[in-house]
Image (cartoon, rainbow, N blue to C red; front, side):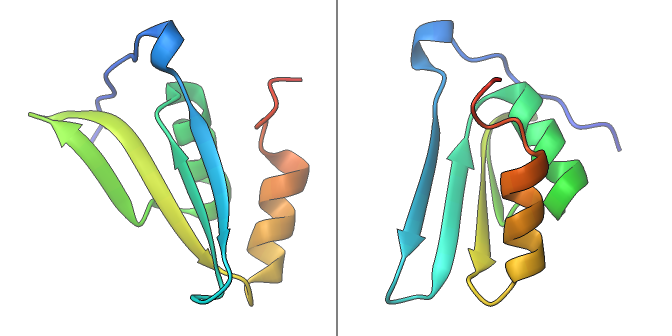
Length: 83
């Protein structure tokens, strides 16, 4: 099924990356559509998708710090910095 994304207001577009040391987890949240699609391809389905009706307004991925290959792929290939 095709995913439907809701475009955020440009001033409200955000991506946060947190290291949760106690949980040994890397947490990534974004509401930027292009990054959500890219992360889906690179590291798989998000842990949670935030929706309004059927439209996705943001996604969160939680990756174990033990999954070094996934984290490396994310850092090397995801266009997080818009470069």
